[in-house]
Image (cartoon, rainbow, N blue to C red; front, side):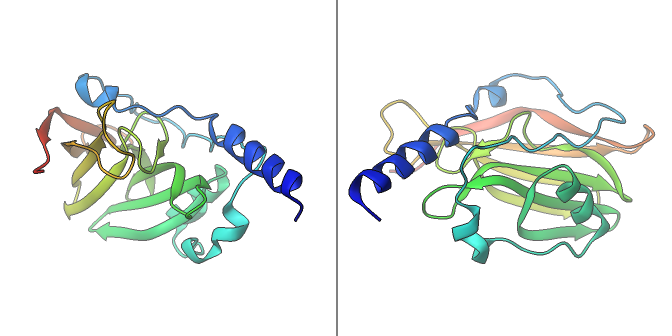
Length: 190
């Protein structure tokens, strides 16, 4: 590939990746973006993607919930988590140059019905508000930890993290995912 073509490809990929502007500010607010009976959000569209070079991070659909996420335009990544009637599926719309998920989301299902997402907006690896730990620790109960970057932090290393617990409210039809506010935010050891 010629130098100018490689540079043009890099600029195009970077500009198309910049369409999604994630932020962890939602972790400081106490609102539920999940609504009873909502549809699975559509994956954001990108002019250029790295997914063709990152097939080793993609998994095939094997569950009915996988197929629902794929139908909304998402590419499956990471393993599904299943506990009782609760299923967690991770989907991404793109990947960065190191094949880390870019514009990704975790979708929660209860008995096959979509219950909500862990974040109100798609997340980007190594950016504020990106998920780094996920635990479906019992049916309908989830613990998730998110990177919290400060302006002076290196991209590799967020100086803070927020943990948020979620519960699936099964009193609604269909069930809905409810964050259990407030999120706890702590400094990481140096």
